[in-house]
Length: 275
Ligand SMILES: [Zn+2]
Image (tube, rainbow, N blue to C red; front, side, top):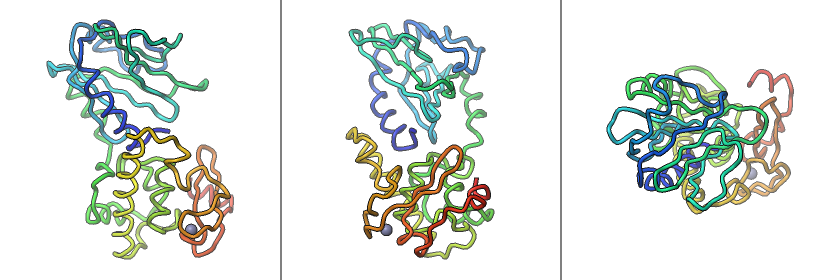
């Protein structure tokens, strides 16, 4: 599940190769993946991309003439790769962009659900498309975070994952951030002290910066995550076994000793409340 660190590492890796040669062929694209029809994908052909940009968990590839922007959102299961001329192509990519030098930018998606999105926009239209996003999570700072936390009483874990509040954090890194901040996933945003807000702001920056360095070094999940997806493993700080609470579409992992004053929170009614 790619979040800000994974998407930023990918952006940095794609920045040079996507602008090395003009687009030779745009497509094919799976009907469920391509979300726009005007301008048509073929409008990209013959144009050169200016590089790769990121906003939250979204990737954008503007053309160097400033007229078009290719937008890619991987959602939870999409994978985007640059394949060289000799490398084997997947049989049914969700989307593919082939360059005149033979490289190809290929989007695949595991599982039956097609959730990853590709769209071709004019520059004004992509701004509207992403206008709902909150400020970038990395480099947010305690002052701005305090405004977001105090705007409305919300539980910390769902608030951190809300792209409208702040952009870039998902299920995995919110677990890691809250462990580092030593805050309960269920704490109410309006009830944090100034010191806790500062701790959370620092934890967001430190966690995401460390995560980006790990992902740039191609660290796999088992090395990148200290608590996410590690039920029963010892907390890296205090060795208490990590607990979890399950929801339909995600799981919260936490350390009862470091984060919830020793309380193990598994109540299903609470799960529904927090969704
Ligand atoms: Zn702990």
